[in-house]
Each structure stands twice: as C-alpha cells, then as structure tokens.
Image (cartoon, rainbow, N blue to C red; front, top):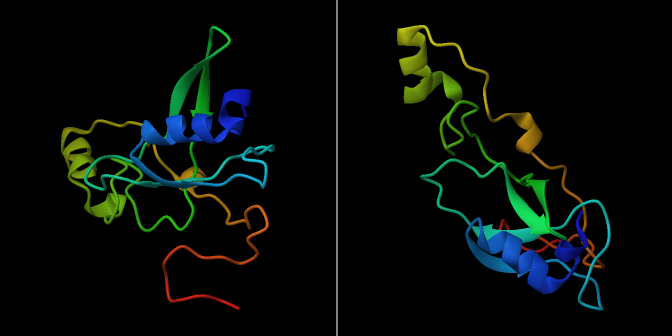
Length: 131
C-alpha cells in the first residue's frame, strides 16, 4: 500500500472517491501499516461497485484494488448489488446478441474479514454486540 494511504487523511481521500466516508481504521498513533487499509463508506448501490482507484503518488499513477467485507449478492456482469448475474439485464442482452465478454466482477471483490487495530470482535451494525 502506498505511504499516502497510511495516514487518516490519505485514507479519507481514497474513501471519498468512492462514497461518503463513515470511518477509517488507524492505530493509536493515527496511522497504520500493512498490506491493506479498512475504510467504511456509504455507497450508491444503484451503481456498479468500484473495483479500485488510480491514485497519484510521487508523480506515478498507482492502481489500488478494493475488496469488500460482508458483500451481499452482487452481479458479476454489471457489478450492481442485489441481483445475481443469471437475472441481470446486461447478461440477458449479451446472451441475446451473442456477445461474449469476460466478467469484470467476481469473488475476488470479497475480502476475508479480519479484526482491526485492537478492536477485538467489534461489529458495525448487525445483530448487536458480541462480548
């Protein structure tokens, strides 16, 4: 992960390109190091899931890949939540016109859930707290 993403401001900047930032995970010193960062944002679920973003760092463009925790059913063809690809209008249109195109979305967008900095088993929303 680029160094710019290690500060709260850097993480908020990345999150803001996707939606409204709710929280960012950081350690006690306001930064974080590792292979990934966790940012919670409000997404417009009527639009395709963002697969990542290009950010500029030290004059170089870098692709940052996104993964999603607790990702519900989504379409591997159009990237929109709440319907599988078998009932997608995009899939039906491609089938009807015999256009074959590799899916731009897939299981790789699902992140494995991990605990964040010192939070133990904290949950966002859901069925209540676990003690």
